[in-house]
Length: 114
Length: 482
Image 1: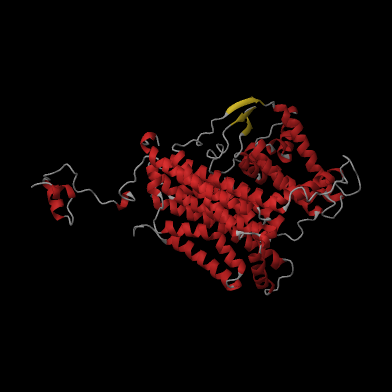
Image 2: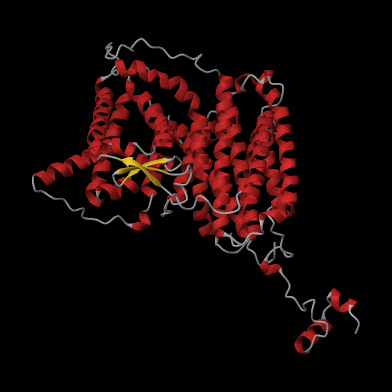
């Protein structure tokens, strides 16, 4: 998640969940009913934890199965602007300056004879 | 979604995926004999596997459904109802239907005041809490929203309007139904009924039920007089709104003088999301959640602590008990809202558009099958067992020893279905409802997001919601059955 995204709803939900859990555990301890409830909810909690870490397990396989290759970047707002296209062997103007200032120039430029 | 890559290109990965899914199904099949030999949740001590494994298997079924939907449902199919007429529906049929509804209502009120005060001898508690509250909504999925034709308050208002027209008296509703009120009256009505059924200490008293039925009738009459019959019926009648919502799940609908057929579930995406619509759906699930939790171990251990707080304030019985349970009801609804909120917030991380409020409205209809599944699963045993009591009560509604239909001596057959059978019906109902919800969400995601990747990512979050609700529902049911 980028820093610009609001996290307060997640914090609120996490805090509510933790509070509820703390209340139940404080009342019951880790007794059998509480552990059983956790066992029931474990698949959902596990999946939630994975997604909250911005992991989408099996996404590539799903997209490949429907014939839609995944985009290289997760989301548009995180995508870095392209500084060169593969065909531009001799960048000029602003693109030349941008590429010269880039930390890692495009691979095709490196491979091409200058 | 029409710009998908041609099917042929994706065939090999899809075949691999299907092979994997087939293996997964076979693996599930290998587990199921062990589950099938279980003796239901009521005999959990003898289960060969822990009961919570049912929730895990249900989660696996949902994950497999998610994969199948993602790969084999490439374009939206349910966004338009695509209704087709079956036959014409004569308008005069509403007259006998309304008459039957009014007659039943009169019987309920009369039995409440004149019948036996005992729960099992008077028809009121069984009719209201089993037939009206459970059997009617369950039947709407098959027959459509048939209650609107039988609604006693609507029939009464229409009769008054018809008589007035014959006497050249016309009544124009003085008020226009405010849009911002939306379905909030339905929410309030459902909460009120839930409070009566689950919390109020004297809820089984036939006289109380008759008085409240009359009060509701008067309230509906007032609403229809102020805002118009159809305007109020659609958005102000709690039960009408509740039954109409579930009626959208099914394939039939009566309107415009005809009987129409449509795809199952396709009536839901066109549900108008007025203010209060999302709350109405969440409250329906929350009510059932509390009903289950209030019979479970966790709440029964916590409730006395909450109750003691209010007892310490000097409140006399049964107020502390009712206040504690009221808080429990609100807590259950809050948990349900929290589950859905997690899904909405998660989908919002996938793409900033649509916004959170819009997402909440766009996907709320996907929870309707879950609400139905919760109702069916939770009340199935009540419907199957206690529902049989209506046959004897129909012959002897007041408990005065009559035998109008010769069924007064019929008893409830508890061997009709065992607790194991009930458990499997509950599990199947819950899983089916959540798979339907997943399908609706997938269909809406395809129509909402421009790229398949965003649609699939958003549905990972709805999968969390569905798995969460399934696990919660099974836990509640198992706790009740314990």
